[in-house]
Image (cartoon, rainbow, N blue to C red):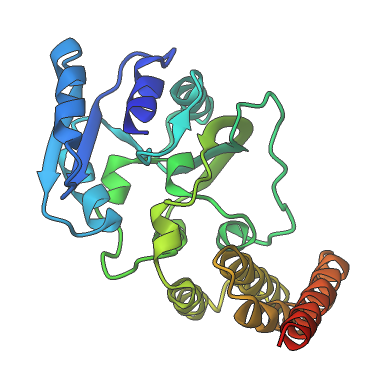
Length: 284
């Protein structure tokens, strides 16, 4: 997968970039793959570290960077060819103001469509709570992020926690063109951590920004978080746990537009569980 990620940077319409690849203690001959790219293009750099997880890897890459603007890319995702160009244009449009910039997201395939953001926010902190903005969609001035590095103790939700700290002191800008492509697959690192870790991060981030987040947004965020946890549990066939997280997501925010969908999913789980019990009983 990393070859696809690197090639997506090499194909960028905007050419004035530096690619720093941080190897977080891999054991699958990643360096051999990267060396082939380094031989062909001196803009590609390689940095090795003992396994410390992605926040430490990103922080080390940030410190190593020579450029003024920092973008991120996970090894299993890709940029569309205009990703960096669109950021360059947006930064120029905003008179090169130092801040935090975001782009739109596609899943699986590039789309010419525009992403719809939830614009019901009262401030920038609420915006990043209402909209999930992963690191590969971000571009931030190096002077800002050097003072606000990723919290290396956080395993899930480290991006939103970082954005909240940055946006307490700096502006937010975004475009909604879908220039980043997230590849969904079973071995994504985010799927390897406990679901409750992400919930702890969100609750802590809410607490640290409680003066800027309305009760409505808090309920919506927690409701969506519980539901996302349930989806992760369903993928792992943990149906009983998923049931309770769906139930929690409904009761926390009963006015959520997705409540009907979640109730139907809940009923289907009950039906599935009952069918399973009957099948087991009749097979005895």
